[in-house]
Length: 160
Image 1 (cartoon, rainbow, N blue to C red):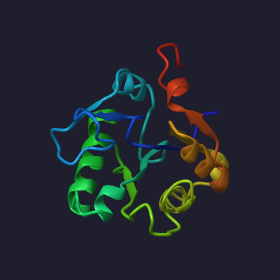
Image 2 (image 1 turned 60 degrees about the vertical axis):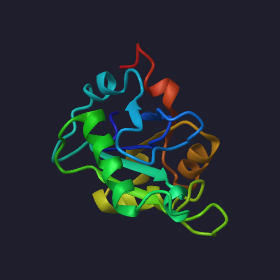
Image 3 (image 1 turned 180 degrees about the horizontal axis):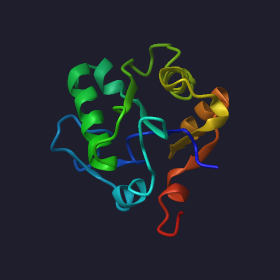
Image 4 (image 1 turned 135 degrees about the vertical axis):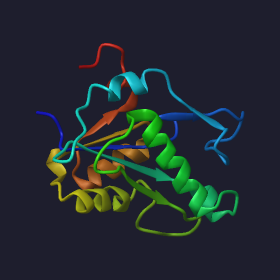
């Protein structure tokens, strides 16, 4: 069964930073799609009745003042466009802007970002799929009761 909602982590799932030693980009020219992302997402028939697309990403560099919230959101929107092309409805972009030491309900492994995406598209957890690359992505999916698939599996060359 195809999910009605695909939620993706951003960094090291859909994109990688081109600046050595930097875990996430601070500017629009500091990232590129990972190999196979565009080709794999072209197989998903995103549409007005689903499946839908969302990105859920921890962006603590916003909290530290290294990236503005507007720029972080713009880069994630640009990422969605680069990865999947124009989709309708527009992808849902959710990110945690808090510093690592600041407690919050949205930073993965907390489920807040994923739950917000479910509510936005009116999709039950069992009808979504979260694709990520870290233990905290997997734990966020577990807490939100959303099926999880590691990025290396979702984007493998022979994936359906």
